[in-house]
Length: 125
Image 1 (cartoon, rainbow, N blue to C red):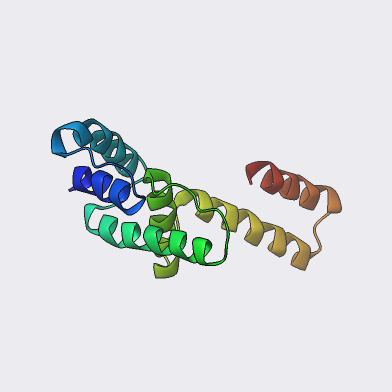
Image 2: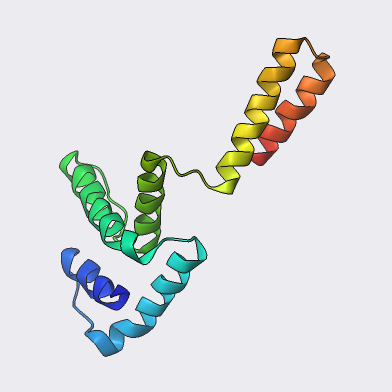
């Protein structure tokens, strides 16, 4: 399935199609990257469609669009997750830090303690 998307992305961009055999190694790279970031197989088609839509919007506005590669597909899959309310662990930790800072400010904690957490949040982002 992912190998077919490689050729589909090439075709949409006006590039020469590779065919299944030649596209397979690239498809494996895409699969590895999608697996690495936890993109479920059932979410790939929607993310790919969103990536195409993103490129079209940018081009319609006269802006340069990124290549229709695995990075854009991953970015769109993350956007879909966020819209569904799924937060990855990195985002959850960032939100925890923000909540802790708000609690410290509300309870009148020492400025130095608050500054420590704010620094950690800045460094984390």
